[in-house]
Amino acid sequence: MNLRILAEAEVEIESARHYLTEKASHLGDRFIADLEETLETVAERPDSFSKVETLPDHAPYRRALLSFFRYAVVFEIFSDEVLVVAVTHTSREPNYWLDRSS
Image 1 (cartoon, rainbow, N blue to C red):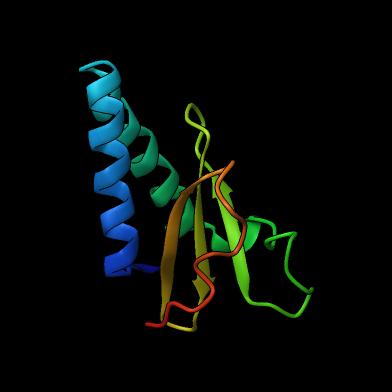
Image 2: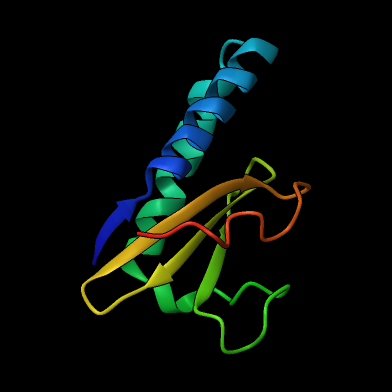
């Protein structure tokens, strides 16, 4: 399925990569590799991920946790694409991204 990433999520990705690179030079690249692997799985099997548990059951958002880093990819499934709404650290304020639109 096609995958589209909102501009705000792209900013979050770059911010996380930059932060992690400053902590240790290899971590930024490792974060991107972990994220790319997760995004591939989301694009292949978006229905296999659970809905965001801090929202009502009817809310369309799901999340995929990265394997190594404490980040989550928040996304919505449409008939022709998966829309990545946020790439967020798991300890960040929940649902801050709800007002984002495609």
